[in-house]
Length: 462
Image (cartoon, rainbow, N blue to C red; front, side, top):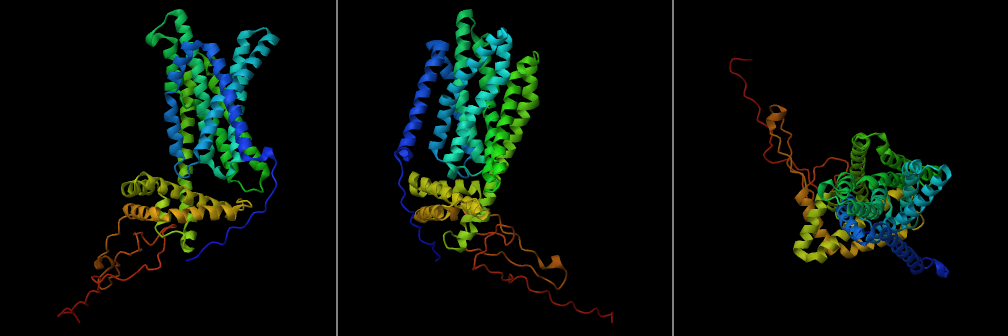
């Protein structure tokens, strides 16, 4: 069996105390915690205790659905939870704090300079807020792109990181808006459907929970395309995220300014721009996920030839249905630990495929060999539980065998039909760009397909 070369020994380098991981993680956690405390105090001051609690209870409702949706998109190559926790915390704490402080300062400065508070509020909502908020949310995507580059492989990763960040930001903003609406109802005495709280909940939570994620996802797509670009195209890698950020600001400004288009401006913008944009971006993300699966099927056969994987595994790992079947099989026979081992095996195999693709395109970096060896070692340690599950999934999801072609389909006396072809552990037709070729595959004609005997001559015909 072929083996990989030994892992090279990296030379020891002296690191300063501020370059140590625990120092950076500690500083980041401290920054987010302080931001959270400050934003909590600001929101509670504006809404009151009761308004804050009501806003918190209503604003939390769409969060699990949005997080689950983005995790579903990230099932092919799931990123670590710590990245998602950081993105959500940044959006809910740091980005929200930056937005509140900057928007308030800019609006007051414009109102003082123009002596027109109404115009200052409109200008702040349509110009200042989109620029400040989208820049603050894009900072989280930039940090993940720069410092967690190993986990940022393409468009889907950019969409997930940006969407989780925007979900956290919308969570804090909804607490503020719903809390203020509840405070208004307390003063006016409105209750039920006719209340400001109900109207705010319907617009922000029911109709447009995806608004902020939709804006920031444009920035994430720009970073994702930049991650797929070759390393030598530095200008393209710099301009693509900037273009995505500008698109996010423009759509955010259009959404905030819809109230100035008349009584039905909000619904017009919602139907003409928001819904089509949401459908288009959903299609793009699903297409990108299918593209990632095709990459897995295309890159992993090289590791089959080297002996690291079995012939069934590229087919099973390139299908989301086969992956689910493999995890269920492992859970049934090895419990939760077995299912987690299979999930870990699938994630490592997918990372190997993406790493090999970047290596072929010249974007792997200096640590390609070390990272590849780490992932292959992880696959080797998990193979005892994962391989039987994946082979079972490959057999369960393999396409049906083609029906035998009868001899008469090719004319009298010329029967060239062949029986089904066996591919070792599972069946796969011998065609298609990703069909594995097992070395023991047989192409023997079926015994029932013998040539027809020659016809007897007619007695009255020469």
